[in-house]
Image (cartoon, rainbow, N blue to C red; front, side, top):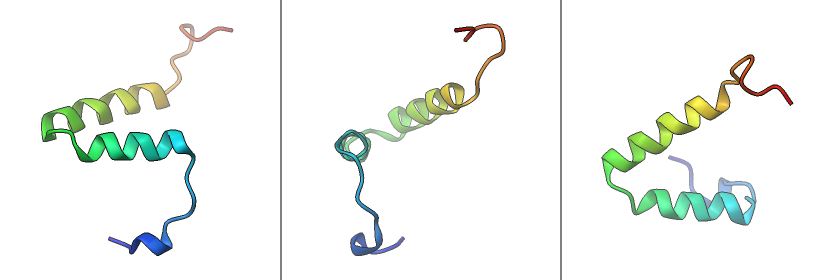
Amino acid sequence: MSSPAAIPKMSSEKQELLDAFDEMTPEQRRAILEVGKGLAQPKPGKLAG
């Protein structure tokens, strides 16, 4: 893991998410990561805007 000095400046939203993630149980972390994967993959037909 890199030292904190090597981490680029993040938005406050990202920092809040990381802080919350640190306090989660392994089960909660897995659930969050699964949701993130789903959100990162656009589903044709469902997101027609």
